[in-house]
Image (cartoon, rainbow over all chains, first blue to last red; front, side, top):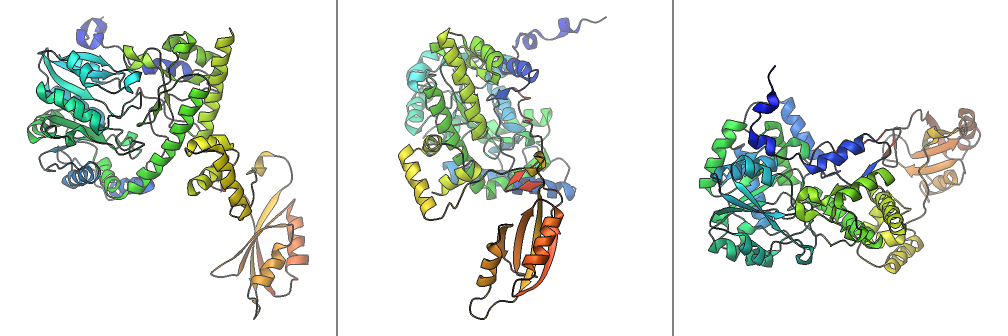
Length: 391
Length: 159
């Protein structure tokens, strides 16, 4: 009999499964668990967008689209980027519609890396960058970001991580899991280092519309940066369209044409129904975004305040829908804390170290839940922390 | 104010402190604003949304379409007030379209409501006709879908 495990590529076998998964697997086996673990909006896709999808299905528009995406959608993306972030792209040559922001990240990395190229990844951050770099024979190089810097990438930390092999910087802001944002002045500060070392930037801005206390600024709008930036964005978070699997990359044509080659061989094109729906989203749903952002913002304040009140120090996040409380005062590791909390109080949260070693000592808490749910979960976590202190 | 009302509409039992945090203001400011809204009659009451299907207390609800003769001087006002005065009546609306007053009535059984309509409502001066519609099943009330098991289907993905 064949031993398949032996045949799996060493590179694939070396990838660790996502650390987020484990706790959900335990939680799913238990009753009465309330979760603050999910990294997905709790809103339905706005009705007008769903309707557009349905209409196009009814009319039988079910074929492939152009590889790079429907021209009408690329036009709409270009208008949106201009209206929201003052960025100008050529819809015909500088936009690529992808299967979620995830595919755009994958393509951006694959198009630029040669074996041995180093990619800088600020951590804690979303779990996909480093495995994709590894699969591309690149070398992921984490840069630790610290709470005292509001989990921002500082020019000093960036400078310190650059070697003569460094090719690309991943810029994951607004950040999952910390909720950190990079404001204009912070982007300007790192832009200088990026330019001096001639780096490519892959800017994952999937949470851009979920920015509080001010507007999101894209690094591509900083002078000199657009020509070296692959901007990744999508529909999942801003429009609550996770299951539609639709995202895009905006970048200079030399990058987009190479990325489109990989895209065309790997997936042909993004789902057509989703593309029709997305046009509606970009052109007519600003109000829905605003409404959801408002709701998230109220929950954000409630959640940050709640954790600080139960004695878990929490930095004020200004983007995405996560807070990142420190659990160091309990003396437990992130995983111990999450596991004990799950068994003792049936609350599921994600250990911070799932997002890189520098996330140790923190937990990721999502507030894409109803206010009632959030309050109940924080109450249970409060009891748990109290009991730990009394032991 | 708009945000505050939105929050209360969703959950009127949230305490002032939580609301203050959500709106980035002080507890005192929230208390003052709510007091003002109550005094001005913008908020005219609070009540729980009770799903009567879940308790075994007899309860029947009916919608009555009332056609009436408006008065020359007071229009629909007088008759509407008279109808509103009955304890059995939960709500009264003046309608556009095929009839005039939309009246929602509650009672403990069908007979209760039938008697109320025949012996009290229909006899009022100015009432031309009544059409009584009993509610059979409630699927959604006050913006809430009833008797639905809400399970969070998210969480099956690792991000």
